Image 1 (cartoon, one colour):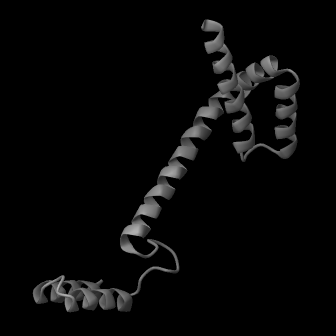
Image 2: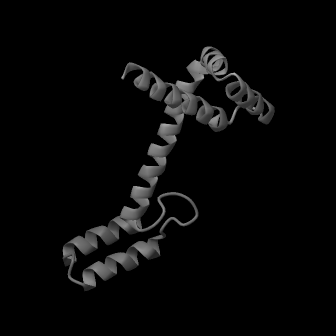
Length: 125
């Protein structure tokens, strides 16, 4: 059982190193090719040398990638909730917001007082 666990752990480490090699944008193509060859030809030595030389950067790159994914997710949720992109050229205009408010008012979703407050806020902002 111990040997099986170590074997699985070795493959997880190997694939993690290979994934980090190709994910690193700061590394040139030649460096990626060199590390890939070293990991494939001499896997144990290549992986351990990679971990010694670039191990600290693996964690930092992983954290940056997770932050980018989190930001992309938050941006997607915000776009889905508002129905329009939160930033950029497709930002809703005052006319779009007033049209949306008028639709809500016409359907009876908001009262006259709420409509007037929201309209004043759109026109002031």
